Length: 168
Image (cartoon, rainbow, N blue to C red; front, top):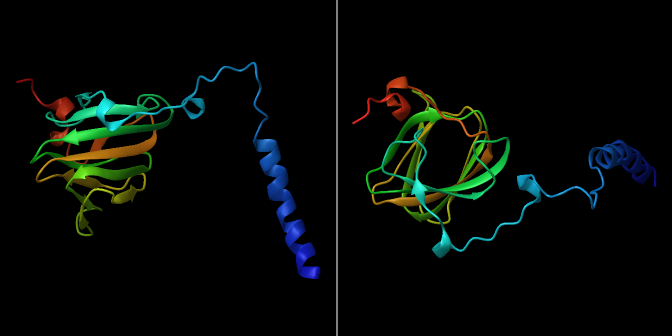
């Protein structure tokens, strides 16, 4: 009985905080943010376009949810051809990667303490904010990236940044 009372009193601050931190939804407020929208996209209906200029040329991208350029959650897919590579870089936010098709190799960590992994469809990788990594594929891949915007990428070697490459 005493342990139940202690447990109950220990939970009270958490319950009170949760109740004050979660406002009741109102019927008059329109659903405008990404967290309140609904999305259903069939793989065959994915609208692919060129990947953003922050990534090496050759890949395609599709935004599934949210807006990677704005604050808030988003989901994108990246389709990369055989031999594609994104040089070592990092992001200021956590990144979750799910392999949808093909092969995907990641080298994670800073020089001297890197570890590599090759992943197949259905595999998942969580990369914490600021973790250096690079990705590549031998035979081509489709990966899904879930993160929080605005999406930013900083290349470890500024010469690798495609935005700073001379136009061809």
